[in-house]
Every structure is written in structure tokens, then in C-alpha cells.
Length: 461
Ligand SMILES: Nc1ncnc2c1ncn2[C@@H]1O[C@H](COP(=O)(O)OP(=O)(O)OP(=O)(O)O)[C@@H](O)[C@H]1O
Ligand SMILES: [Mg+2]
Image 1 (tube, helix red, strand yellow):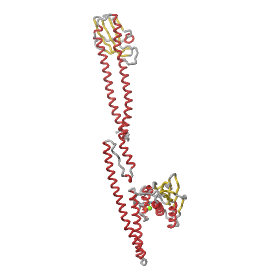
Image 2: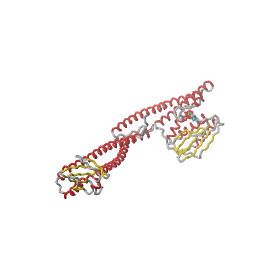
Image 3: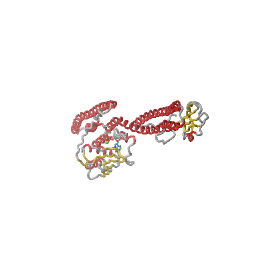
Image 4: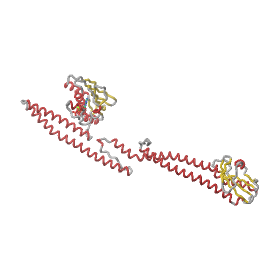
């Protein structure tokens, strides 16, 4: 079965880890090769030195009195193969015997190290264990004299081991340093991407004119950024085109509509005697007014899309507007209980007409989509620097599949169509754009079962 490794989601971490591990693998391989070479080369050098001593002229016809000096010199010549910290140790040992195997000279430490060991009789070099250490032993004959020289291999091995351990520790430190460097470099390499992401995140429809600067970036990223900028350019152009088109179309439609409305109103006033004509004109007038309201909303939406919904920072009080709207509900349907919970003053800054339009849509929605004869509640309270304006109504609730689409343009939940309630589905979308242009927000709030609540938040003045 295929093993499932957890996939590292961070690209930066993957690059850092990958490069560190690759470099580390190369170093460890080199280390292994170097260790192998050093250990074998060292054994080779010791053997060659030992053979050279045995073959050299030094041992020939040495008078008995000079053997101690020869022994000391031999010991000194192999002392370089011991760890630096080792004390006065025995590096090499010497044994000289006559033809009858009687020792003529023996290093003072010979008995301690090699007293019980079996000495090789044949030619060449041999490894012998003595007192827990490994000795390389060779032998030579000069006349009737046999000479053995033993070199301590264990000390040499300890010296090599100490050096290799130091190298291994250095590799550990190096690995951490390489990891940190790789992490830093990967982070630097990712910077243009992070920069680009930051710009993309900060980009809203009204800021499509933003461009990412490629001047400081590396070639590879500069190309990506210029492609992105070109894409943004096209997007902005087509966005502006479509916003301008709907804006222009709505604008051009308003004049004929106004004229049509005026004509109809005049005809209606003159039609007095003919009830059939009067009714027909009244219907037409209704439709024209409806059309005018749609065109006006589309014009505002187009302006909001183009970021041209300029909001003057005029101080205004929303309390009278809410009172009026509550009164309107009472006029339309005297049976409908209206619950008010409003502070003395609701001071905000912005465009009075636009904000009135928002509140009117919320209130008219509550009337249109609330339960027939059900209550409507308008409540306002201050939370920190914000006004929370809640418009709620008795309702069967809004089905979950509609909730997240209510603010889409021309979207109307099914029941609105079934009940043939007047409206086109632009009110909430426009209301939200207006709220956002005022630095606030509009959302469907959580509410207890049996009611629907929209919450408009606006910065307090
Ligand atoms: N208080 C409410 N209770 C239940 N459903 C609502 C409520 N307010 C809005 N809705 C639903 O959200 C939809 C969108 O509302 P929106 O105000 O955007 O459009 P509309 O009222 O249908 O038309 P208009 O453009 O004239 O306002 C409505 O069609 C309705 O289905
Ligand atoms: Mg509406």
C-alpha cells in the first residue's frame, strides 16, 4: 500500500527543507568518504614508517648500550599519531633477542603491554592484541639478533576518531546554519509573491487602478507582475466600460421617462370623463413610475460600482426620518403594530437622501415580506462608535438557500414572486452599497425564530 506522507503546505518550508537536506546529504557523503580515506591512509602510513624503521640502517650492529636511546627515539617518532590530549604514553615498543631467544633489550613497558602476547615469527607486519590495545608488530634480523618493533594502533585510531567527531559536530552546527540561511533565502525569494498577494487582497472594484511595481523585483517575478498588471488593465477597462455603459444607459433613459411621466399625468388630468381611459392611463403611469424607480436605482448602482458615489460629510439626524417612516407604515396599514425603540437623536454624517432610501427599502421590505398584520420593530442603539439600526418584522423566516443571495442584484426569494409583491430585487443591493459608501455595513442579522432582522451599522458623528 502506498504510504501517505503529510504534504507540507508551506512552499517556503519545502524549499528551505529541500535545499538544506540536499546540501546536508552531500556533506555527509563527503564526510563518509573522507573518514574512510583518512582511516585507511593512516594505517598505511604507520605500516610504511614501521617497515622503514625495520629495514633502515638504524638497527644494524647497534651496541647494547644504545638500545634504550633507539627505543626512546622510536617512541618519539610515533608519538605524532596519538590524540593531542594524551599524556606520556607508550607509542612504540622494542624487543631485541639473541639467537637463543634471550632478551638483550626490552622496552620497560613491553611486559605490561605485550608480556603475554604471542609474537609473530613470519615476515611482514601483523596485528596483535595486547592489554586491550591493538598493536602493529614487525620483525627483522641482523646477524644473530632478532628485533621486534610494536606500534600502538589504538592510540592512532583514537586520534582519528577525535578529529572525525569534531567534524561531525561541525556538520551539525553547519546543518542548523544552512537551514536558517535556506529559510531566510526562501523567505526573500517569496517576497514578491507576498507583495503581489498583499496588493491583490487590498484590491476592490473601486481600486482597480492600482498597479504592482516590478522595478525592484527579480526578472522572473517582474514578468509575472507585468502579466498581472496587464490583466488588471484589461479588467479595469472592461469594468469601467460596463459601469459606464449601465450608467449612461440609465442616464439616457431618465429624460424620456420623465417626459413620458409628465405627458401621462397631463393626459390623466384631462381624461376626467372617460373612466376606461382614466384607468388605462393610471396603469400606464404606475408602470412608468416603476420604470423610473428602477432606472434611478440602476444609475446609483452604476455610480457605486465606478466608486463615484460621493458622500458629502453633512451632519444629519436620522431620528425624524425613522419617525416619518414609522408613520407611513401606520398610514398604509393601521392594523400593523409598530414597535419603536429610538434614542432622542441619531447623529450621523452623509447623504440624507441616500440614507433615507436605505431605511425606506428596509421598512418597505418589512411591510411587503412580513406576515400580514404582523408587527414591525425599529430599534436603534449605540455600540461604541457605531449606530446599530435594526429593522425587524414578524415572519416565517428566510430559507437558508436564500439568505446569502438576498443582496444579489435582481435576486428575489421565491415567495416574493409567488405573492406578486411589487419590487425588482435591487433594493438591498443598493442599500448595502450606500451603507458601505458611508463607512458602514448592512447585513441580515441573526434573529429568533418567527422574525427577520436586518441590521444597518453606521459610524456615529
Ligand atoms: N424583511 C424581509 N422578510 C423576508 N424577506 C425579505 C425581507 N426583506 C427582503 N426580503 C427578500 O429579499 C429580496 C430582495 O429584497 P430587495 O429589497 O433587494 O428587493 P425587492 O424588495 O424585491 O425589490 P426592490 O428593488 O423594489 O427593493 C426580496 O425579494 C425578498 O424575497
Ligand atoms: Mg425592497
